[in-house]
Each structure stands twice: as structure tokens, then as C-alpha cells.
Length: 183
Ligand code: 5GP
Image (cartoon, rainbow, N blue to C red; front, top):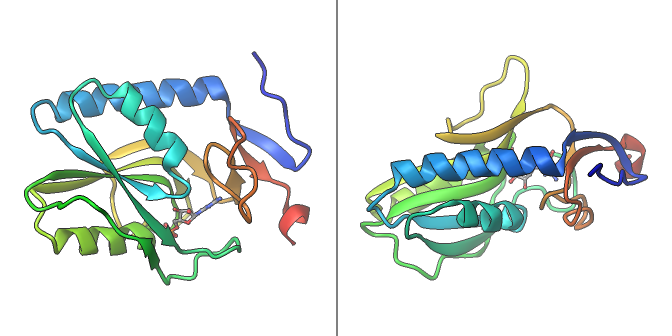
């Protein structure tokens, strides 16, 4: 089934089918690594909610979920480096195996901040699963995630949970937004 290309999308980077394969592979790997550890999946809102929901269904071992809401871009397309916690966890992470689930890693500053925050609460372990990572030539993200779904070019991408000004999260594929939409 071919994805219906949206008029604001320049290029489709990951089709629905490719996303399904990526998530199934990550789920299998995580299930193997976290057998008997009852991981606490921490989904970073809002962008990661769709990936987290799919990933959880691809994980076959017992696991729990909680959510954190952060804002790093506002309504823009550039990271400000300032992370605002809008909603904190309801679950105590002390002694838990935390798996932070993120939509996309750009500078990595958002996750570095969140990892520091959660680490301060005494988890048994903390790892990161990111659906995508941006390949920025000559630039390494501030953290090195254990689970990476896909590499995408250094462009502003939307779909599969990722927004621009709260739009496009519902696209079932990941695509590059036409620059004229945000410039
Ligand atoms: P970082 O702190 O790694 O620079 O930025 C991470 C956050 O910025 C992601 O969680 C995501 O919300 C947002 N972000 C980074 N790149 C993109 C992108 O290409 N598209 C969208 N929609 N959000 C992005």
C-alpha cells in the first residue's frame, strides 16, 4: 500500500511499512535485553507517544509505562537548548530499569537533561530508545542511545508523532516538511 503523500511534504523518508519493520526489530531486541527486568518505559511527550505505543506492543516481556512532557522547540524548528518540564513522572523510578523513549534525537540536549534528572532519582538502570536520530555531519549528539530505529538527514521532519506547530503528528509516515511551510 503506498502512502498518500501530503501536499506539505517534500519527501517521504520512512514509509508505514518501513516503520513497522523498524519498531518490530527494536521491540524484539528490547524484549531480549529486558527479560525479567520489568522495564519502566518513559515516553517523552508529545512527539514520542505514537512510537511508544507501537514499541510497547512489540515488546513481549512485562513492562510499565509513564509519561513526561517536555518542551524544547516551542512552536519553532530549532532547538533552543532550554528544556521545560511540563509534566513529570507519576511513578517512582528508584530501583527501576528505565527505558526513555524519544521520537527523534537532534543535538541530544533534551535527553541528556532528562537522563540527568532521572538518574538523580536512583534508577537501577537507564537507557534510551529513540525512533530516529539526525545525521549531522561533524556533530555528535550529546548522548549515545542504545536503541536507534532509523537515521534521518539533517532536515526538519514530521509525521509518526513528530509535529510542526502541532500539525502533521497524525501522518503515518515520516517525511521532510517543505521549507516554505515554515519559512
Ligand atoms: P534535541 O534536544 O535532541 O536537539 O531535540 C530533540 C527534540 O526536538 C525532539 O524530541 C523533538 O521533539 C524535536 N525535534 C528535533 N528534530 C526535529 C525534527 O526534525 N522534527 C520535529 N518535528 N521535531 C524535532
